Amino acid sequence: MTTTALKARKEFGKTLASDIAHRLRNEIVTCQLKPNESLKFDALRLSFGASFTTLREALTLLVAEGLVVAEEQRGYKVAPVTLEDLHDLTHARILIEVDLMRRSIEKGDDDWEIRVISSLHRLARIEERAPEDYASNTEWKAAHRQFHEALVSASGSPTLLAMRNSLFDRAERYRNLSAMFRPHPRDKVGEHRALMQAAIGRKADQACDLIRSHIQTTSDNVAKYAAGVISAG
Amino acid sequence: MTTTALKARKEFGKTLASDIAHRLRNEIVTCQLKPNESLKFDALRLSFGASFTTLREALTLLVAEGLVVAEEQRGYKVAPVTLEDLHDLTHARILIEVDLMRRSIEKGDDDWEIRVISSLHRLARIEERAPEDYASNTEWKAAHRQFHEALVSASGSPTLLAMRNSLFDRAERYRNLSAMFRPHPRDKVGEHRALMQAAIGRKADQACDLIRSHIQTTSDNVAKYAAGVISAG
DNA sequence: ATGGGACATATTTTCGAAAATAGTTAGAAT
DNA sequence: ATTCTAACTATTTTCGAAAATATGTCCCAT
Image 1 (cartoon, chains in turn brown, green, red, orange):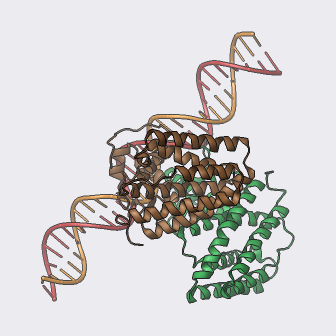
Image 2 (image 1 turned 90 degrees about the horizontal axis):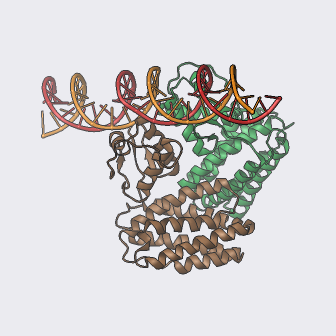
Image 3 (image 1 turned 135 degrees about the vertical axis):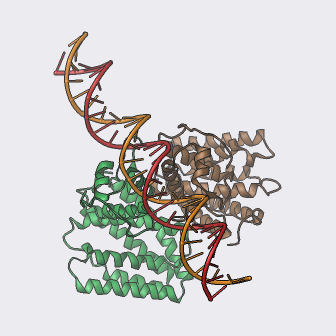
């Protein structure tokens, strides 16, 4: 628990519950709320300034996304991190993201190309400005997320896209965890540029291979550097 | 709205909310609650005998599963059925189910084989007893669900399995819709048996082809027979 | 007739109290 | 000392009232 706000009013979403879910999601992904930490209503009410009911609705949303687990009659807790879960997650991510990538490359129009190019450009600029510790930079994280989102944004599969997004959040939590223990961030600049070029160049097979190994390598690195804090699978 | 119960107590799950979600899910999948029907709290409270809050939590769960859509500040409604959604759903289902099938065949142990064989046996028996209209038989539906669940049950991918399950529900709603208008059910007995034999015989490629065409053909049939009641994509 | 604004109604969203359930401590019997 | 039970405390779960928001209606000016 970090903030000590007493009364919260809406900021992002239109309902308070979705707003709280948004803020909770962020605290979980950034590990301000630690894995396995139990989410007691009294404490949550204090820091988020919402009532039981509203919090409960927000937590229900996060359970569906896999960031929170509910033990019926015994409350909620932040989803544990395990090697097993990381492998499961990585497998699902590769399966879905590769499919979305291929379809995006097939269907992408001019606007899609522009989204991909401009989001990569923004990412590169941020890396230039803060070359050392960009991976723990929230601005970089947002840009990184947007670049990957842009790549698959032309796939036209709302169902798989929604699944992809919640998997991305789960994976980002693991990345944040490993960033705490990793000496220096891996150089991803080249990988992202290659990804962009393959996508815009409509080289589907190549782009799919790149995204597959991008996800796999990231996952392997997490497993390597965060091994200490991750419970045994 | 169908039932007129006034006070409801738990039956299935451990919390009332998850129980209500269970019952609501069933009414939506069987189309007792029709696509696009608006889910007003007063009416729901009457037929399910739970309070605003509890219903809201149940609805939140179903939104995550894609059976209900929420329009913020304007309530909930049963998710619409469209050709576009059916295609999207079918694509996602094939992608995920084929992957799970392959991994189940790789990893499945003796217990898995037994689950597959016995669930097929039960399915076949039910079809023998009611050869005509088995597709609208709830007993058959449960057995059918269990057979397909058994096939992928050894995959060891909780994330993809959870996704598969909610996609299965969404697909079943479309099947129920088309069953209302279809003259006679397609003969699936042979398909299911072939699926079982390929799986148990560890012929992964063959089993994956079979499950792919099984899902695709079912979807095509739905599109054909339910075209009238499905909004244009 | 038509468009717009103010009031009234319908509906959703949020709240905090009350009920239900789990967890904990203390005391008695063996 | 140990096990069992009973009472107590902590916590979750459910409820219906109250606040917030959307929708519909009526009246008037143009």
